[in-house]
Length: 292
Image (tube, rainbow, N blue to C red; front, side, top):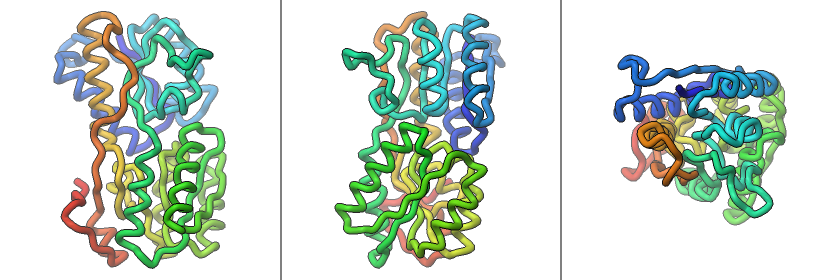
């Protein structure tokens, strides 16, 4: 029995969910075949609810807790040290603040994480296709370790590429519209969408506002291109979930965590949205895939 814990409803994160369950099914585990029971819960971006979900899974004595994204992973690892936790769309255990005093991740944690170094390439794409861009704007959630790490990586890369970065904090998706309008009024050339749950949850609002101001969106998250970003270099969110699902299937087959540990995401790609690219008159070479 797997307890699947989603922190919020979001089309991008849902791609990872689909990948996870597809990997399980390909390995012979699904509710359709009566080989697996899944308890699915979504916290709707509410931290107290996320905590309650973790407590419920523990009370049900699930065999495995699957977590998506980082806030779910952190909550599950804080709540249990015995039930295995399989993470996806999460930062490394170090960046999530989950290492113990000896620098080790939780013994019950495995799954797939991402580092922030790939943001260098994501931002370099902007300079490549928009050489006249001078100012990059973004928003970030101070409460998210993944968001803070991404912001630091973004700032470092902008400094190296001699780009000005304007970043404004946002506490939750209900504030996005107001904060984004303030950011767009500062005359940014490009909006950059890093891995951030608030950005995921409010991305339709971001796309609408940026389009109205004719500001293109670039990202480090390939899944956001389908939803209106121009282009991205980053993890394939579906494959991220699929990779985690393969680990979960291995756990279910062998009944223990032998050989399982947190591992780096394997599939990244450069993708662009042809309709949005045409809207902003931006050209991409053959190294980019067309988003499907």
